[in-house]
Image 1: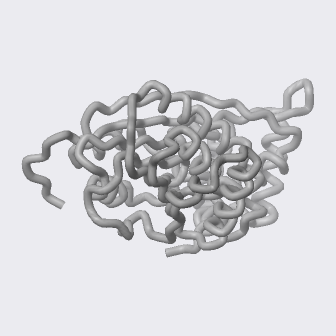
Image 2: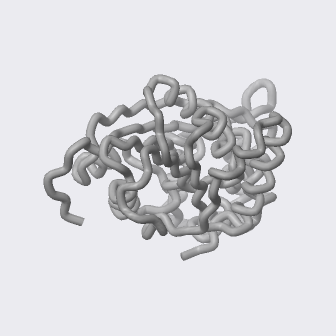
Length: 277
């Protein structure tokens, strides 16, 4: 398994977009009545959602999971700084835990989490069925999963250019994008119920094609280069920039890109007769 997002400076460039999506997820959480004992932040990254979840559910145990040790260290630093800045009580530290682990084999016993939270952390792992099986296993009956990922219309402006070059360069779309219908079917097949799916579009305007491409790379961290080997060919890179300038540069000399964001929440049933894993 690749060491995800170990170059923290690269990942930080997409922080604004990731935080905007996370805040929209928190707004959706306002509509659900919860009193969770144990919460898992799957793919906790820099730890900002751990702090916000702790602020919302003061008495809950919150576990942040990430495969990248560097991210966990940064997460710990950010959590401490936020707690001190907000002058929260010292005992708030006692039920926040950071764990290194793999999404495909979570290092937890079955049936222990009331809530699993995951912001933009599943789309780089295409084994979604295995991930959701693990979520189902570790979630308590009547527990909630809530997560976000990018939909098929993400980067549609750029992918339309890439599609024309596909045969020549043998490339994939810049990001591995998820079909919403496939997601829903997988969750239902596994046993989750009461699915609620929201789709929102975020348009981000960039001052230059170079800045835009750097931001896209930062969403994927180190995996971006693995997934898009040919993208970093010098000739191909400059060719794409030239096409972007011609096709999408607006009157203000800026380029806009669309990010389609899928928000899903679902529950594990209160009673389960028989599950085949």
